[in-house]
Each structure stands twice: as structure tokens, then as C-alpha cells.
Image (tube, rainbow, N blue to C red; front, side, top):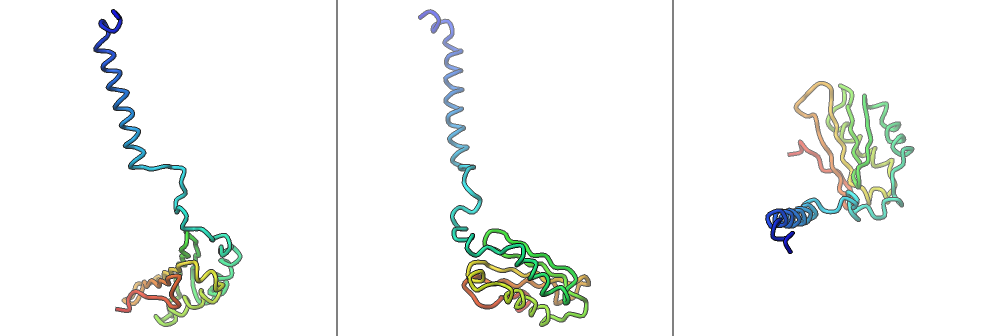
Length: 148
């Protein structure tokens, strides 16, 4: 009992520290969540059945290589990003046609699963470029910027 009387201040400080530590851990878990969960949660369920392979990405690039300068195809979650730099003689309608040609390379199940974004630009800046086309997985056609 003498130990507790002599070290009362120290024991109170340790108890306060332990309480603050427990509160800090709770606040951390509440705001930052569990780091073990996947980035997209369960939103990517069924992705393996319709996954776009590197071979299919290469076929998209090959189908457009004669009409563009640079093309990159990237998949992020449920979004397929296609970034295209067109040749200088390409007009706006020709550029929009490239997005349709991207769709032709995909299977119907992939079109129904993925949202598709097509970013089209030219090296020389004009009033009509850059443009962005977006196709939601439930829609059949692209929606374009600059169509205002």
C-alpha cells in the first residue's frame, strides 16, 4: 500500500497515458479504416470473366496505329482509358470515329462491364482539341466534351 501512496502521481500519469492511447487507436481506426480491405471493395466482382488482356489492348493499338501518332491503353478498375495523340491532318469527326473503332475491338460483355474514356489530343493546339469521350457501361454511345 505504501508503494501506491508514494507513486500516486506516476500511476495516475500512466493511467492517463493508457486511456489516451486507447482513444487514439479508436480514432485512428474510425477515420482511416481497415488497411486490409481492397481499394475497390466488391465493385470489381465478375471482372475476371471479362478482363481485358494485354493481347486485346495490343489489338486496339494495332487497329489504330495507322491513323494516330501515339496511343496508350490502360485499365483501372472498371474504367478503360485510351489516350490518343492524332496526326495533324485529323479533323474532329475523324478523331471521334477512333473511339468507335476502339469499341469494335471489345467484346459485348466487356462493353457492358467497363466504362470507357477516350482522350484525344493533337500536338498543335487548336480550338477543337483536346476532346474527351466517355461511354458508361450501360450506354451504347460516347458523350463528348466540346459538343456544347
